[in-house]
Image (cartoon, rainbow, N blue to C red; front, side):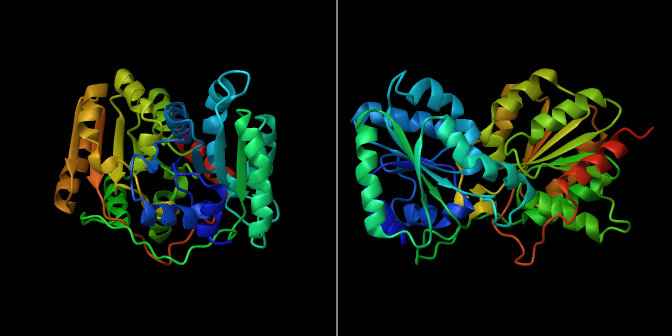
Length: 374
């Protein structure tokens, strides 16, 4: 089904969400049609944030909003769905569009497997009626479902469309760019050249994939230094904090992304309050959700350096060149104090970028063995 038909049939005029590769057709269509427009389309920091924003839209207009997400975002919406939207509370109607990663029987990455298994059950547990959109779903079938859903929405209930891989199509081509120079892989190479045998905790998406391949090129393929946070977007810095507190004799590095840092921004406040002297927090900021298609984050207008300082980081700096990055990394390596380095990055990755060839469990065991080696 074309995304044009899908959006016309559901009939909403306000969308907010967190981009997903499974919903790339919808995301690109919204960017082409509305761009970022506070009256029609906003990309949120996390899915719970989007639900609250959409609830405000409904309270102000009386109309039904749409919140889109990858199924991993279901965890972020449980609280506002149960304690804000639910008919036993405020009865705020909402349409969810959920990309079904890790669908049973469809090959996917390890972080999506269990989430895929429980995707429909989570919706059931939240009392959200759903319809699964497949490649062969017809417009008439969708119209019938929307007709049934309207009665539920009028009663203050929520509904969802779960989108299977390739079920929505869009003929438009959308390219995302910024004016930054350094590619993320180049930045990670610079980081690895400085960290040596220090433990590195890396955020989800292409950053972890690039770090893995860089280590593969190193003699001995020394992956024991790295914990690859292949899922759990936004939590790498908190994982790194937990390690830094308990391994004060080791320099702990966190490679973060702008979308991840924004998703759970409160983590920076906690890190800044603890001030571990052995922690270096590197935020690679390409102002986009690149791993899932390149749609923008709001990081182009966010001052991470000022934010880190306000949260209590003693040292924070922004760099946009290789030379400045090398200087900042060397200073952080030598300094016995919490540091944050924001690195401005271009959008883009190699077409032949692979994925980790070790399992998540193998990564954990190898990392823990190294971390706890006397």
